[in-house]
Image 1 (cartoon, rainbow, N blue to C red):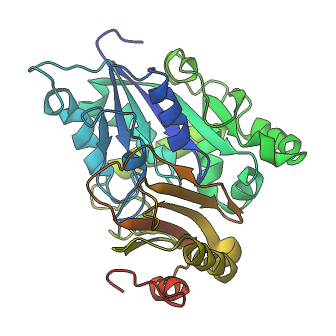
Image 2 (tube, helix red, strand yellow):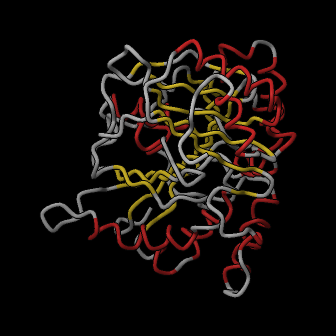
Length: 346
């Protein structure tokens, strides 16, 4: 690895695979000193960067809203090239390494090709490794249904299997599929996001050796696409709430919510969208509770809520981000209006 260039680790993985939890654990362990974190989220309103509360404000940068692999790829170039001076402390670059956390539906190939192939980026940065988080409960289905998930695994140098305590025997089938897609990638099972920092930083430089031949093809396709400025990568519309047939919707509630009625609204939402509901994440102001509650669900699995020590910002409103296939924002809002809630803007 070049001594002059700054190493970049890309943390990817499909929706709900636990990327934010992994980063929060590393921060709590003090492993992210002198590390600039770039977090990309899908949709106009993001929550992940606010939930990474152990990370200092000037260490964590939310890349502009939209999917990092399509609508805001140029923003990634600008963010990386400007970062040494834009986020300087005392007039000097303070960070020695970068972690990019991609949105869960990101195709990693454009991101990697941007780091490897853009001259202004590659002059300053060295792609160190791609670390892919895989949800052991839903991972096999995600790989079957979403090409993005396949690409995220295939490009990986290292795989972090999450939620293996909930997966049962399905983890054996998943392991077989992962070895087919990424035969050279090291695997490690992590619970509650407790990954080791060495899996991010003690890697070397990204190499195609040992990866499937399709990985080279994907990067080559992205290189050709980048050479034709008049071609919009993947033909995505410039809509930060859309990626193909997957949409993001954010519901905001200004008043504290009744816990039981809000849970009933979420249950109705699960029944309404079923398998098309890919991800729910929210920060909730519960009536009678002085601290924020964080909720998150992946498809049919809803995890126990967490109580944060404090609000991550001055905003005390309840905000729920919903990512689903063929999502209808009005119908989503009806699931809450039926229980007496009034989402803002609907």
